[in-house]
Image 1 (cartoon, rainbow, N blue to C red):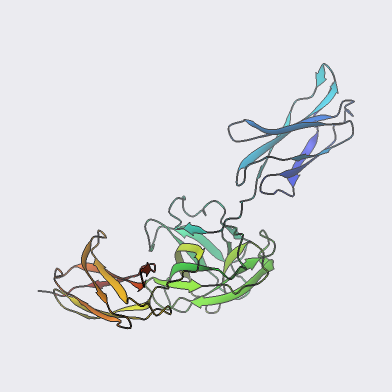
Image 2: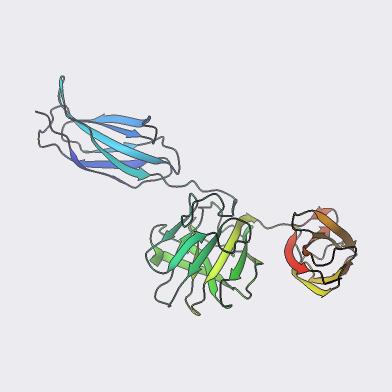
Length: 341
């Protein structure tokens, strides 16, 4: 005798709240409606009631980045309620953070991590296990033309336009060098057409290199994103993405292994823009990340040699700046292979 409402929906879904709406019951319930928002464990996270004829409500106190189900029932009298209409699922938005680090390793490919997503239907973007920078996963992004551009929304941040933070990530060309990736933001996090570019980087090699991009200070949304330009139509792999404070001591760049012998190697790098007063520290690590050779150089000296290495062995070079006791992050790895005996 008391029929449930229909067409349940949620709109203006935020970090901790959502607006709820439904179509009225044909029973015109005299005592209005009861509604509940339940989490995946069926625990009631929010609930309430409305007066007769009122078919909207607001749920508050929800948890960010959480899936919920909405249920609503009609109350036709003290002893006369309808069945629950629902579930109607929705997910709250992710809260903005000041920093993040994402290596794509905790997700089932081809899906994206929580708070990351491919936005829109054009182009291709996914996670994969082939050719990661840090195993087991990396992100693949590809545009076949300039009219079919994939956009990947990153974790929301609270300080994109502060001028105090930067993106740092590893990137390589997938099959052919030259793919260009734009870094920018979305004014609408669910609409790829609202992407605004702040700059771009080019995948210059078939091996991973570290790329750094610091957005200029400005008034931006809090939804950073990557976009492939489609010109050229060369796919790109991106891994180990970080949004971090710009350090006071910058790492060196362009690590290069210039000569390799059976038991040693000579290498160089481009000096840090911080002009470190105490020079540089360097390490050579084996495949197990154990340090097998290390040393330091004086201020302004960007050349070093490692000895005592094992022939026919894979190694990686790392270098960091020493700015009068403040150390930069490690630049690297730069892989090399020692020669035959």
